[in-house]
Image (cartoon, rainbow, N blue to C red):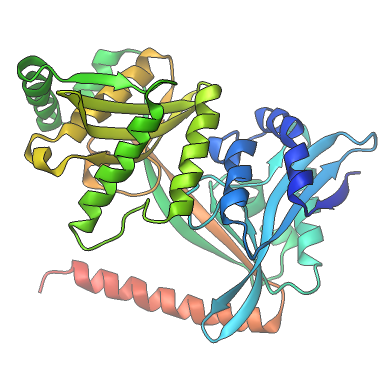
Length: 367
């Protein structure tokens, strides 16, 4: 039988690093967004006004068999203020495939133990676990451990490339127009302009990341929006994550340099057998030549040559992603109300989502 204990201090969180990473490697879902580095940095930069609540499941000899990386926050749901339990790593940073981290052999027992503990909590209104894969044991165990009023919602679609055995097979599967664009861009930038494609390392990752911030923000400001890096806390978070991941050879930061000036950057991560595509930026003065497409092709090719099995575009079904992808992941959210006011809030939310879905359907229909 597993024993549940609670960790609620940043120092205790810090001391879990070695056990955390070891457990993640033994888990059912070893994704980079569940790594200690990612979630500790998230807490460091976005944990203000939140209460840390990491649950730990230990066996009879004290060995950690499961970790539930959580926090408690107060949120406005309609007219109601609710105390909500969430996964570390949620808004304002995009993190996919969140979950409990459990040694595979103990995964079901630890998951049920965590959910049983959480559904019995006092002083909490709602459990809101977001961005889980459909085979998450949290979702599968909901009927057994959660109240009858729980809701499962569809989250984000994440296009991905599952690499075939050889590169030529993959290239031939890509839309012909995209292949022609790549050839044309390669000829223009690499052949005529003598631009250079690079992967950032210790000497240039800070410059490449700074240029990503600038190029991405400039493009979105031109559309009247702030972009992903407007907040200083977000930039600080990514600067530290880049440094940490670089030290572990998990940073996949590629860029295109023309006349010693960076004109396009692709920012992502490598974990186990997958490249995770996170964000991009490019010089708008070259928009018609699509420099971002060339950097993307280079990153995909480098990932294949490195022996990775997949290239994950993460959330968003943008057209340019779908032209490369040959499969996709779908995430889901689990919402479990623990109080009457949370149940009322979920009923209101359910009605709102139903109306929103109908409006979207009507907008898709031709007049």
